Length: 233
Image 1 (cartoon, rainbow, N blue to C red):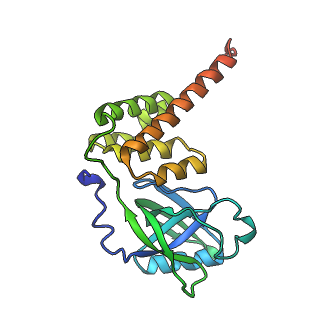
Image 2 (cartoon, helix red, strand yellow):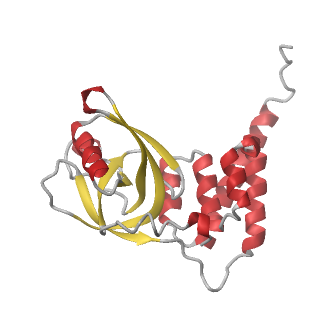
Image 3 (cartoon, rainbow, N blue to C red):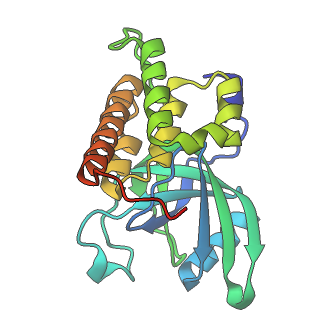
């Protein structure tokens, strides 16, 4: 992976386990940013411990039917999580926090740890992007397809400084997939599916599929509104 996206130094303090912050509808992709408002007592304790330690938190997503067990450590979690680092923190009244995480790497829950803390923790296996020796796609062409589709669907990305910074850094295909997935604001299940796919060629297939679905949906919506409404100007 290209140097700007190498997080090995930031993972140097990773001990092999991390606290879990499970939510029903949040997925943290590598290199993306996630703001959190932490107010539950158990997660306030998690934040305090993380800030006093390596600042690493693994964002996990509940599997279905978690509601009745939410206050316990029992709800099932999707096994692939997003390991992130606290980059910004703000202490609030009542022990609450505003945190901003930056995604570092995918990880798989190997086993949950039986610890006395009120929050969940797990042994994790890091899952770096996998680029097969034998390409199943033309990766350079796929890069162009994804960029063209994303800019067509979200022209505001043209003005996004982060996009231009990534382009100047010769963004790897796996990171581009994650950037687009994050920008598409996918359903939690679709986002989790992409997080769980470590093979970059297969992930790019999925992202392209989602892009094309969105483009078809937008085109259909425009056709339904034809002729267009008059401008107020």
